[in-house]
Image 1 (cartoon, one colour):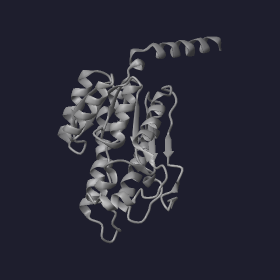
Image 2 (image 1 turned 45 degrees about the horizontal axis):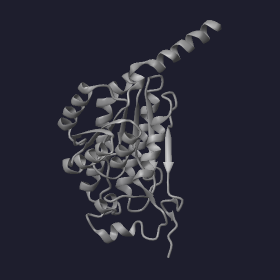
Image 3 (image 1 turned 45 degrees about the vertical axis):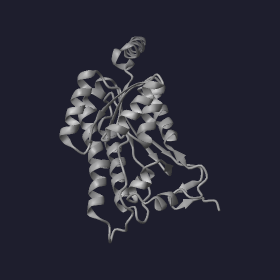
Image 4 (image 1 turned 180 degrees about the vertical axis):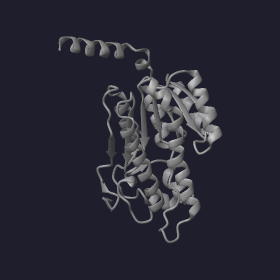
Length: 273
């Protein structure tokens, strides 16, 4: 018995002193705005070396420059997670440059809010390509190096993947798929040196999410948050991500559901006035 305890203690000491366990390099997708940008900023402030990925180079560079101006470590790479060639190229570069400890999947969007009877196939296709297949693609390509570092795959899904609502069929379906992906991957990787975490935000007010959903219609986008006291902001989600990643490698927070106090569910939202 004593030998077993000593062996276990030796293993833990060895694991804690392993170079791969001290790696603090994280890949953040969708890092040009919203939750992705704030996550990159928050993690860099916490001592992580950030590799920021997104499609829009101008926005991405601005995020990276701001992080570096504040003394953080951040490099950016233009990457479209819906494109196989783009993702292959960028992941090859990332892996060649060193080990990776965490992947935070923030890339995602909602397109339209039409009922099933009249929803546009292009909107559904766009959401599946980005929210589901894009997430799957980057996870598959980085999973081997993450396991070498005893790392973490973190997926930012949505409460839309928990409770459906009228007009949200396409977005809800894509986020259900994303959450199921996280859960199944967790089951499949039990026993492997990897954590799988799902973060499901509720109402979060960002500069682009609702604006993109409603095709640039500012009045519709603003109405989503009208009268809601203290909706969540991107940094609230970034802090929950930072906290989950900062736990010991052996602690897996399977799921975090985070909402503003004013939101009981999608259909139970307190508005003032």
